[in-house]
Image 1 (tube, helix red, strand yellow):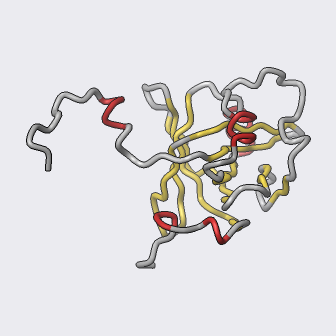
Image 2 (cartoon, helix red, strand yellow; image 1 turned 90 degrees about the horizontal axis):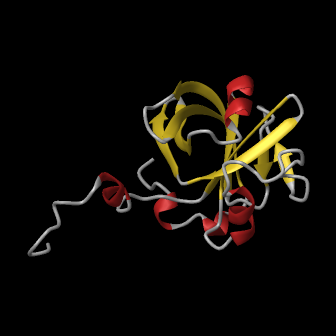
Length: 163
């Protein structure tokens, strides 16, 4: 333990010490598809299996999730710079083109696009949406389908051993 702990961290500085990852949040509705990079995804229940996803307010996927009541989470490899660049903007530069056109994609039961180059993907139905008084909003999704695309990449903290 440090002899002089820093007790004066701001809230945003303190958040930097919590685990975060690289995920693409996707959804589709009425022929439109969109995706956005998010950093906070957390399991929040086992029965039924639920995920909590925090997404920056005003992102391009929000109307599709609202109307379809569904989303997918694609877990990215840490070295996948292409997908990070492609989905990092909450407002794509050209909203008339499909961001998934040049990518290998499949769908499960909800119809949300799933990137096949992800490590793991979860297809979810929205059970709750929280419009927080903050810069992010929170979605709770029930996992209805999932796929492990690269089992060799699922190591360390990704795997629970007590289940």
